[in-house]
Length: 105
Image (cartoon, rainbow, N blue to C red; front, side, top):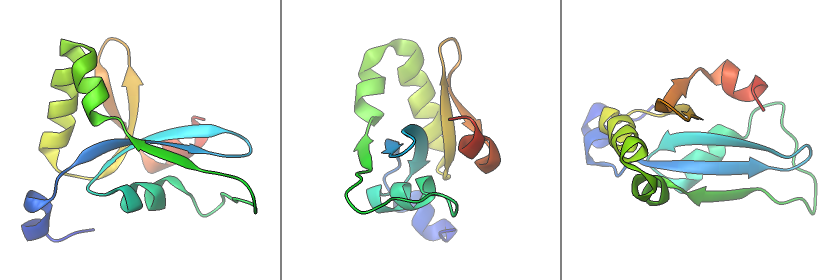
């Protein structure tokens, strides 16, 4: 958890993380790429030698996708708080609990 003073100065982004074996993805909103990876890898996840986790910033691509997703992205980023997300086709980005993010894959 970051202090309130730093929270407002950080640049918040949405990241998509794909973890190996079994392949699964998670969306998180946070202030850095390294923090996104830290959040996405759970304590029960194992990444073996030679396996690759992929992570990329999807903020701008979703803002450009449609007005709905653009408004939804701005709403989530405006909250300036970390968390797991899921993408609903009609509602845009929706926050989910940590427990749901691990079991939804």
